[in-house]
Amino acid sequence: MHTVSDPKKLKDRILAVLFPQRCLFCRSIIPAGSDYCEACAKKLPEIVYHKYAVGGVQCCSPLLYKDEYAAAVKRMKYGGKKDYARPLALLAAGAAARLYDLSSFDLVTCVPMHRSSLRRRHFNQAEELAKEFCSFTELKYVNTLEKYKHNRPQHSMRRSERASNVKGVFRILEKSLVRGKKVLLVDDIITTGNTLGECARILKKAGCSDVSCVTVCCTEM
Image 1: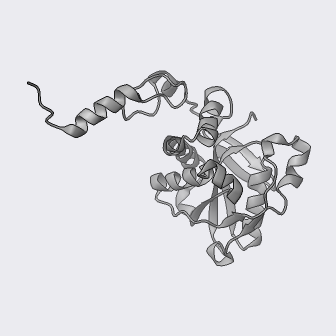
Image 2: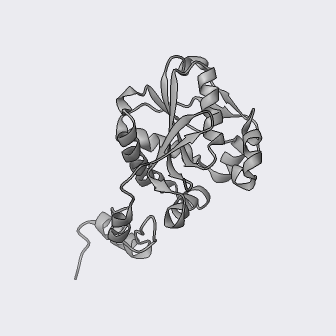
Image 3: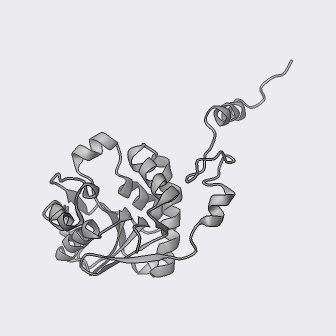
């Protein structure tokens, strides 16, 4: 008669059969503890994508917002895949380390989400990414901004409407948090750069010495 010597190992095996680990990008089954399959690992870009948010604020990204990379971000945001934040933040940290001197930043913050959206989605993907980013870089995460007015999603707007759509929707929580500080601002995607640019503007108005950005994805250059 067989006995279970380690109930935890048995539980892990059962869970692995019922809920197998899947590649972050292509969704193929992969070994437990992995983030993506060997094929997708080999396809990861070796360059850092560099764009500017509105106001001339520089931003770097490890991935283009297309195909399997866009699908992964969408699953995180709209499919409740909060656990995607850690591997995606690791890619963002790698890109940021290649473009910036990370030791020069005083703190990391994120693009905030309006409370109504937060209730619906249950987490702010930008905040999760920023906190995981800090776990890899040993930088300090600080909530500095609030989205106190609800607006339409940027992706639903024409490019010509996006700048006005984010005006006046963010505010600083406490000026003393950022005064004289060099800040790294985190979000999931940069498209036109209006949202990041507006957040950077608010931070600088509150006395920030400098703001740079990092996102997981950027749209085509």
